[in-house]
Length: 350
Image (tube, rainbow, N blue to C red; front, side):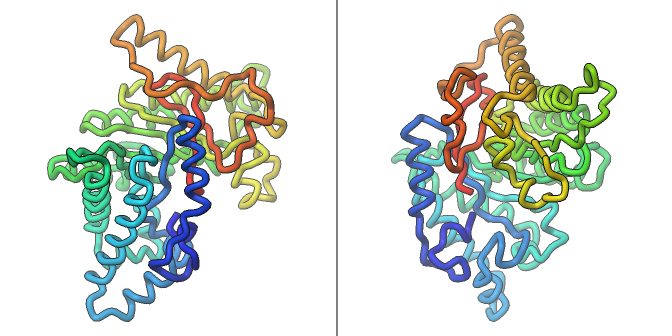
């Protein structure tokens, strides 16, 4: 995130990549996938972008020119620094929800800031990747949604925008759908239909930031013996299947290492225990882990019998037989890479 890469989070231009480099270099050394999160996020002045951005824009005689220059400088500095070490970037995060906040990028530039961010990131990555000018790092538009019904006005706008951007060759490789199930569970049937619509346009899809607190599964009539942990696992299995069965699911990221390291316990203290992830507080696999694994195994078998196999792009780095200590690596998230059909470790720059 922008502020975390600055020496002083309230000032521009002086970057300190020490902590981020440590995480990224470790990921590269162990052969893990690295996801950069995030280049441009307008939700919360001084939180998701430095306060200095707003101050400079407000004092400028040319607010649009000032903001595009700041965005260009930031994107160039960050993507050029990490180069090919980062496999995928969330270029835009939570545009659809940040429009209701003080999103300085939207209020100053309108929706054009989205196009500008992707084109700028693509330009500098192409310059840095190799002499051919071919970009290999994937660029993602990551969003948080409460439902995925095709007649929802927000969904209608996003699909229309994605369709237009595809026609206009805006360099967006795919979308990320955040999977925070905070107050209620997402409808996985609606999710599957929505993701297929996006794939049919020619985009990749990913599920990002997936979690679901155990309280959502109490007294679940669909679960054997009303076991909330089994119900949680079955829900995550449905969630994974919604992405995998599109044929262009590039990844599923769970937002936290284990139930002992989750943002829910910081923001929703009154709801503890939240227990929203695949691994329990002691580092052991929950039914959720096994159910998600079953989704990958089942999909792999279907591909072997009904279509071409998907060539692995990475080797698994986590197995059920590893010691508990292996789960507790600073900054790590579990990343389920669809085209590897395996559970592999991913490191995020938090």
